Length: 316
Image (cartoon, rainbow, N blue to C red; front, side):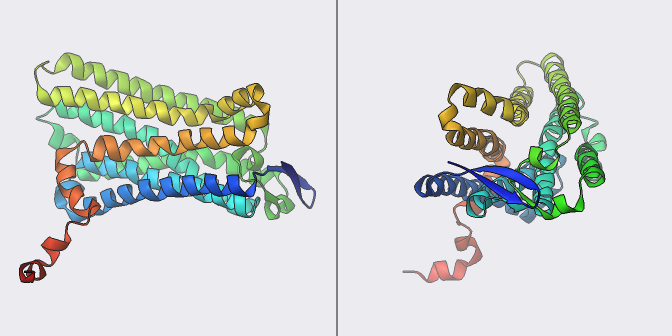
């Protein structure tokens, strides 16, 4: 069913599911969000508790990736639930939510590229790694990642502030990026910047992978693990890239199945925004032996015995 929501002179088409369908979709999304964020939150908690992690550049980069996943998944779920409850949001609030989500979304590919470079340095320049990859330099790189992401989306905000009326920012719209940043050239700018960003990241991944492949010994366990890690970075980047073809996929499937537009949008949204968030904790957190050893203490609440040893001894 399609409704029209009109606020002042701005009209936004809002598509609505039946009550039962809306409940099912939101329950699925919220349950997935809570489950994934619980694991990711446990990873962050484990990272902060032990110095072996927060003094290691590789783990710092990994946790930065996890934190961005938490932000992105939380905002995706929040916007979806609000779209079913209140249907439209105030433009100013929508801008804050969307821009924060865009920051996190742009941070992920750049973080994956830096993690691949870290693997390359560890294998190809093991004697110099401690001097090249320091904790301080790692946080500087993370700061640069945020600066690049900010410079990518801020022009859209400045154009909207300069071209839209104050009445528009007080109106309500269905919270989508194209409903906020409405100038056609902003879409072209977004596509160009995303393409340049992805080309740089892919070139970095290919370069580091083949350098590791040809530099390190084939029999080296560390080299094999590093190559596999870079390949996993590439797989995760492929999933991240689905965000950039999100609208093309929806438009194509909607053209083939016009009556299923709501189900298509929901399914593709979950696959593009939620499934990639499963990769980080499963592939990196649980795959790493050191992280796994500490993580299971908090993930399954097995720290109680360590925290209260006297109570354990008093049990018959």
